[in-house]
Length: 100
Image 1 (cartoon, helix red, strand yellow):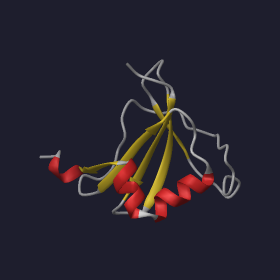
Image 2: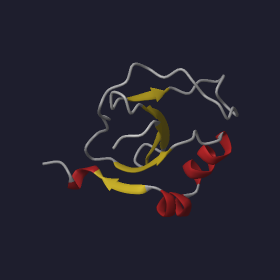
Image 3: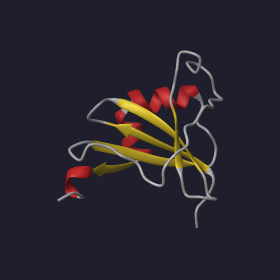
């Protein structure tokens, strides 16, 4: 069963954290592209149309997490900069091991 919420993807290879809105009604993930206006804000909006999949280069290593509630800015910054917390709370995915 799908749930509405948020998906967070830390791209370890690129050193970036991405935030997506997950829609249970259509299974789409819509990225909230952070701008200067989002910095420091706990409520971020402005998601794109979304797709039922995520695209990342196959040689990248990702950490992924789902949350029914949007993470605060402080939580996003903590997970982006604190590898032990990512290891504890996010699922690691080495995309090269899934791709032929």
